Image (cartoon, rainbow, N blue to C red; front, side):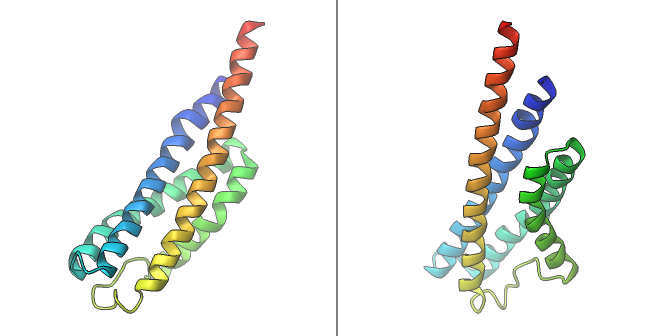
Length: 142
């Protein structure tokens, strides 16, 4: 039971908080670009800085879920991981400075959908974390 608690508290929860914060920052940069508060080069470089580490982290989290036997969480994370792999293989994962205004609405919608996905995953993670904590504390009382 302690390993379950470790998995949800030390691995899943921090990963998902980082993914949520990164995606929120990317949406914020795209919104600033749309309102012309930031130039395209700065917005693209700031967003591109977070993309590859997010892809690697998502892949690691998906692999952790698979290796530890958390099948539901694995099934929830595998579509995004496969989409990230597809974008990386087609070399469409980075935002191009010269094309940023043309793809601004689609990039913003994609990031907002990802933000909603990560919020849903965090709710599931917090629920599982609380559930494991209650089971762990209940088993210690006996």
